[in-house]
Length: 128
Image (cartoon, rainbow, N blue to C red; front, side, top):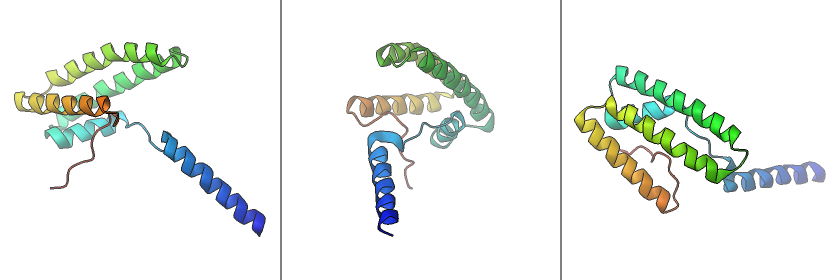
């Protein structure tokens, strides 16, 4: 009985350490990213489907870069930037003037969070 209890504590401890080191956080899928924008920017279904396609292409490009970089984080990040900028331009081309303004504001807030070390993911949806 003690062995089982010790094993359970060990597994629980390893899980907690893994989660604390970022192992519990997963990237958003392209569909989740587009749905988040749909909610925040009040996108139409047509805009959402086009943006989903853009994000799917971006995800494939970034996955191949991640594989090709062989763990060289600096090279990977410098290669990411042009892809992300091009995709943001494609997304903005689909938006209305009001949506572009809100999108730019979201991007600026995201950059501020990244500079402050808080991560660059989407913020949790606000409760109204």
